[in-house]
Figure 1 (cartoon, rainbow, N blue to C red):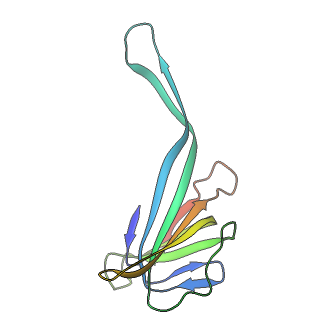
Figure 2 (figure 1 turned 180 degrees about the vertical axis):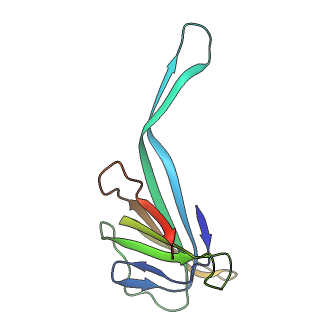
Length: 134
């Protein structure tokens, strides 16, 4: 999932402005593969464990003295839509733990902050990313 220019992103009690993108990545943490005696190709693939990560990219227009720290937990929420109207907007909610915060500064792109988070499921079965009508 890739969301470009969300209006506002909240993490716990913090509100992040000037966010250029939020991306949700999913990767297999454990992959089971099985082959039959009939040929060289897999006949069963299962992914019993998944890791869901969230990356927030923010343009920094001033000094940043109130940054998120690794191990901080909170609910990440933002609203996304196809245009600036409220029609068809969706609310995305993810329980997260902060993994890392890094910065990049360049003359052509300015300063940006990259926040990496790991999504946490409420019970280990439910998808940690909830998308609903706003």
